[in-house]
Image 1 (spheres, rainbow over the protein chains, first blue to last red):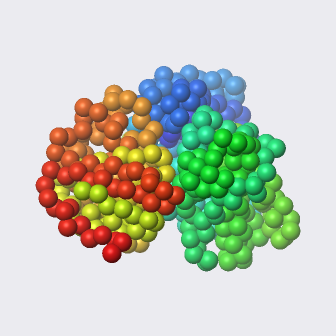
Image 2: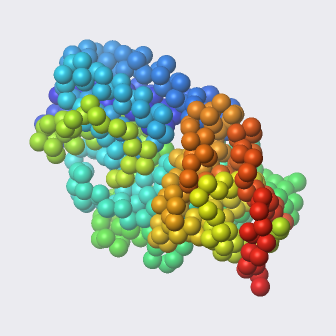
Image 3: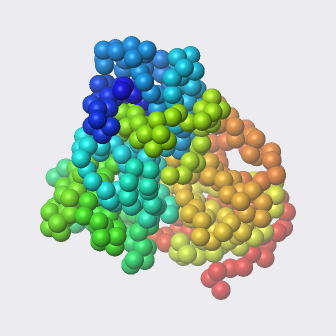
Length: 343
Length: 151
């Protein structure tokens, strides 16, 4: 069966055609992402109104391109899957309304997908034989969360950020350092060749046994450093690679320690990373090294599947569809976007 | 009036004391740099508005609007990612400001002409590595006897 996924929860307009074989193995036929980073770069963040207008302009061409690249027509699609939350409501509505209109016109099933479930299950697009349970570390601009994943559709939240998300901390730090948007890749680039130990940015562990995160303190520590409030009290000799590497390390180290702490606490032998920050090389390397030391397998999808994409929505949509006995969401014409949708 | 804080914990206490004195329809505008403690102060205010202690009061930078149920509805807005007044109007901010909820707005200076005349302004100055000065201006006298956490 062919599945068309549609994703417009934040700044990417995305559509993908995915084929499911034997109920488990996915083949990505096309995975189109119209990124708006160029527009957002100017503003140092995601601008909802621009995001919304761009989604309207992009959505039909992106869907057409996904179909063309897959070499199929819209009539070949057996299931439509669309992100219904969480995200920016004005952005979500564009994808949702489009999907509803197409499914209605073609009398085809449609399922609404939780964006976070899409990220967590994205690994199955590349590694269909991955077995449960696993700990999922979801790290992006809007999310920093740890889940215990026991099966498709069975997610238990173990911890989350109490203030800023990891990606948000990277974005704000990059803004303070005038490095541009998105902040994660900009900091990673600036950190090349830097000594991550030369500036001791704080690590926030909250309580010893807590799986929650807090990244607002390290952001303030960077501000204090740049204001000359902390040693060496002057940034005139600031060496950017050291600052970027130190900041990056402060975030990455906490993410790694908490993910492994969660795996140990729930006696799980597999950790899966997802979300934009999961593309960070320091995080990937650190997780792999720690995993091989402790006998825990670490998986993460390729960079494209770490960003907001529609293939992951098709994948999660299929599993939801299967769990519902291969029937669409009841009354899907009335389905609404949920900005604060929980997993 | 002015009040000093020497730690994030004290900032939260100050926020909580302010939150206890807020009533439906209040619009609280927060001004200050990245890392000055706007979200931290807002978290205290939200607690002072009787939102359950175990709730996660996260930064609304990404979501733009976080809503809570306290003594009255609480709306925590963050305009950091918005660039101009048209974009702010487009996300329906006026509906919140004119309602019966308490509205806390970070980066409120971006509201420009949409800023309501009757509002509580809190300017945050970074005086030192951990010291923050909160300068509160309010059309009435309710914060005059705000308990000082330093005492």
